[in-house]
Image (cartoon, rainbow, N blue to C red):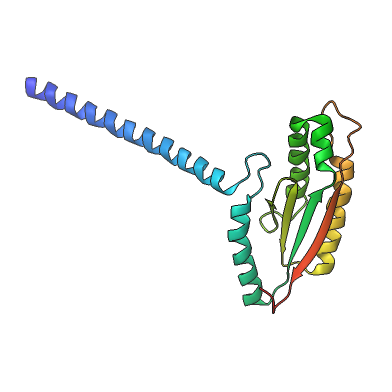
Length: 174
């Protein structure tokens, strides 16, 4: 009987350890996913960060060249952003960045187009499989969407605009 009690105790201990290992493994995997997201994404806007942009754009250019497909990019700069920060404070500036980046992220094709925060108030929107004419149309649509869609709580008169540049990677370019 004593041997059986000891064996049951050891068995229960092993089961508890297995459960603890599974729980810790799940926690570790969650922490690793969070660290990976933090290393790839801008925490304020949820867009890819500059480091991710540098890595991803090289692959996009290589893929466009390999398959002979168009690749366009939009460079967006929020107009008078320093004045927004100076007049309304950095909290409102952060809200403007979040609102504009949300428009950029939702304004593209899911799982195709992607957005990176390039600098303070500068964003790059990468448009694979998009020629220059369609990229210009996308830039105009996003520009117009900012005028209509950006609303900041407690600041209904805040007008936010952005300027856009459009570029297409040609086959002979890197």
